[in-house]
Image (cartoon, rainbow, N blue to C red; front, side, top):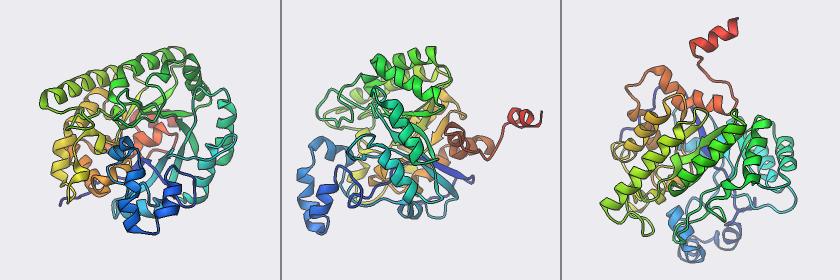
Length: 370
């Protein structure tokens, strides 16, 4: 299997860390009760999961096991990786400003590889300013927020939000403007069917606060684009309709020059590739064949200065190894210049999250010398 690195330094701008036994997660009770027995974990715990959740994760192996910086380091092996950005991950703490507890926990366990923290908050929460203050106190590496918006009207698809159009609320849009006012970024995750309405909501925010920094996670997760999933995409014609709408909606979003796109999460089971059901991981060439058209469309729409390659580990780990994913990314952009590859693998993410890029454009270099 060809797992050659891209030949440039990497910043992985989207991973999730957790330790279900020692920090509050949805699966913490199940891990404490049944985690001591592999047989119980594999035979009983899946029956306790909602079907939509089990379908989404594919297998319970990685959501019930610790995933910490050392695990991520083992996954990326000898690829030249210079850190990661952590994106909020199912923290279930209680009490006022509980979401800031994850930021405190990450500051304690993240180590030097943790470059930035994207915390959790509901942007329409009246207490948002105080929660943002709590995140900032918890870690100097706090740089932004993800308020998960992914929601589908089909109960067979796992929801992360209670309504599919919460971003239409004036209070939510005001919360996004508040992030911009504080210089914080926003990670937006919506499902494919939500993209069209989300674009309209984003346009309203940009009209008021054009400096708002937003990155679209997972390219908008086109449900069942790659194969049947939860009753969607059951035939080739249905999948082409899904793909055509996703292509159009992504292109419309890319018309906003401030918006960035994370090329990530494309091997999650919800896309329908069924890689999680295979006895052996896919080859690099197989991954390129599947995700290549999505990656190329994103690059055509957003350009190489607004796209970020990311792993979404360990959520995508159920489908393939980290090194296979990044080798596929490398193959897909092998003919691009070294500067463009450095942007895609490191510098775009660094700039977006307010970190130091490794390369500078001629204009940036000239500006610094004036």
